[in-house]
Length: 169
Image (tube, rainbow, N blue to C red; front, side, top):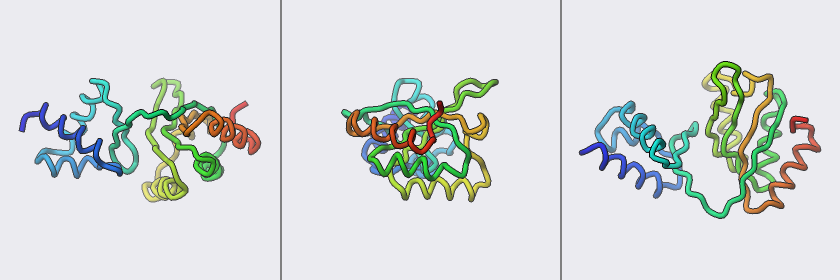
């Protein structure tokens, strides 16, 4: 199979899937290595495809009439669950986390968290992999891109996070 055809089929698979697809599954499907898939994804992104890499695999972001906002938070690891639960409980989705590293500049990690179950899975993965949050690189200071059905929902999320002293001031 030609690389261009494979990349078209990757886009198709990601578009049709309701769940993230791991690189290993794509590699097996197309009879190539995982590294070839990682390269394909990089080329597709360079072409402008909105493909997010999440802890559960790749997803294709299809823009709808969703409202988005960036919020700046600062807190320690112990309050991560509270922060994420607050966002999803109010109807929001956490698309990513962004930190400003002094050497590397902006570092973005795809999250795509939209439920308490997603939050719990994310926190379990941190513990299982014995890793830490990107925000630990910046003393808890981080930005999230969040989305919701309307601006009012985003306002309510921001107000509640502010009430809980989770927003950076």
